[in-house]
Amino acid sequence: MAKMVRRRFFSLGGKLLAGGIVAGTIGKYFPDTVAHAAPTVRTGKTEGKWGFVVDTYKCIGCGRCVKACKAESQVPVDQEVYRTWVERYTVDYDKNVKIESPRGGINGFPEVENRERITKSFFVPKLCNQCENAPCTKVCPVGATYTTPDGVVLVDRERCVGCSYCIQACPYGARFKHPVFKVADKCTWCYHRISKGMTTACVQACPVGARVFGEIGVPDSPVDKILSEERVNILKPEAGTMPLVDYLGLDKVVV
Image 1 (cartoon, one colour):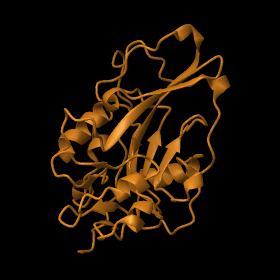
Image 2 (image 1 turned 120 degrees about the vertical axis):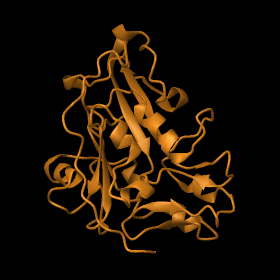
Image 3 (image 1 turned 180 degrees about the vertical axis):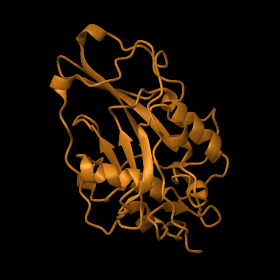
């Protein structure tokens, strides 16, 4: 594999107005009810690798990231399969948690029901975590799923036999069988773009800067800046996968 030319990315400048995109939803935390998940667990060597940060405080659930991803990655729009998707979590006064993601959030979300009983409501974008200790690469019987030197897990469509072992092994539900190619598919952090010095399609499409992409261990990288200055968390730390996707404001109710 040809050696990648390392690139440095900068996050989207400024916040864009997003009023009216998700009418009727709360889409934010109530400060007195915030409870964060377990802290990041990462023991592998991350310098020289890409990193991804999702800011749940900023996400408005507009679905533009999902649309951009489908268009960029040849994932059929009319099929319920996604490389990235958005979930909405709502918690009521009885601490009941409702999780919903209509069509992956591609068209936004309907108005929150029984708003008077809701204590908090927020959006959580999800995607492949590009794990350092990736279970999907371990179960593939033909080596079709592999990790690049810069930490991105990819799928070789020519080698994949469609056995779905990797889909079952992923603790984040980030893999699916492509309805057209009949092989395993997932988010690749737009590897074909980042290898050319571009950012990911979802980052580019986000109107509020809720997604940030860049290098880890590089001082002026937007991702490295967040990791060094903010308290971040990961999904399912108990899985021991050492994911390279970090979250800001990850609530403890998120699974």
